[in-house]
Image (cartoon, rainbow, N blue to C red; front, side, top):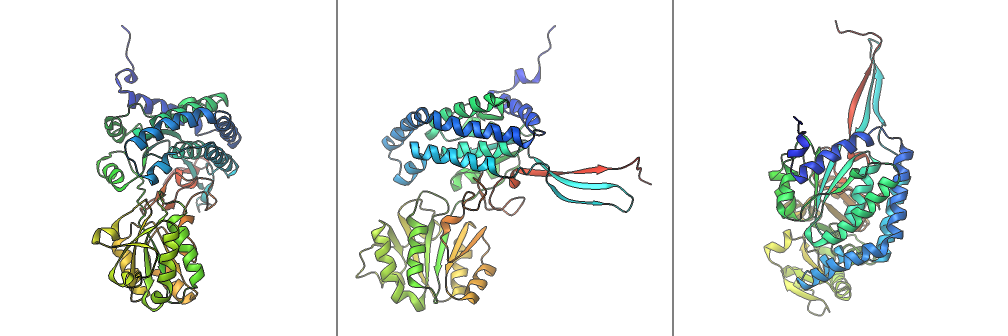
Length: 428
């Protein structure tokens, strides 16, 4: 009688995870050169097959527009030849980065002569659950390959055609470079059932990383039995201090809000010190108007908006906690830096906060008191990004405090193990 393997009775999702586990075992001991060659092959393939990818993406974009999806979300979904080239460039950047696997975190020779080393090792099988951003498909695959991990990609149905095309290109390139194609897989299925199966694949999947809105992230954190690295929403703040340079403040504000609105590091709230409000707000409101931004203002901001070109509406309590991902921003006047910090502590998602000031004392106090993954001084919130930080790309921005916090690059996709080397040592 022929014996069935456990694989035969598994669901398609678990079968994919099982294959990924085998691929991860192959990837873990590979030298850097093998992984880099695969990444460079991926980058070349993305450029060569860009038209195939853009054509598939156009179907997703058309479907999204028909469904009335917001402009900001459509922008996140859209791939152009230029964006595909930029994604390929990011993959090459990842290939050029140091390989974290095998790095000695710490080591010593113990008093008994045993050599002890703590070294970085891959996490294993990484599941990524994300919404309509097909660039995440490539970023995640590149970072996981470089760090020796197999990846299971579960994007949203809104980007299904785009992700299918991208993963097809990735798998072909990886296989052609001599690595197992199953190191990169799209999770089978478009329904939520496949997401729930992935969340329950403990023992096959080592960690899940959700990327998307608050509802998606909360669901996975609360329901997954697979360990989760929590990435968070971006209710980011820009605080303009009493001693701010006005030109600098206007430029940072507009860049933080409007340079690209559909991303988690875009500013969603403006806080202005009362001592500078009368001078700063008219200029700021006009600049926001020129950028097409609607301002959800408290009473004190409204008082400075009468002669502004800005579209200003009265803010509600909900505005202070909203991640708009659109051409909208909440705005309030605060009595002091400490009041700004108090507001941020109450409403922040813990992502990124910025202060604009010429005072070193104010900057120091703000950075000490604000507890977010990133605190920017005289710089746009838009810099909270793995690529901008020199990581090559990012797997997500973690707003939790365990294992990884902030933009997650290659080191955050590793764990560690201890290597204990003795010479016949036994414990007495």
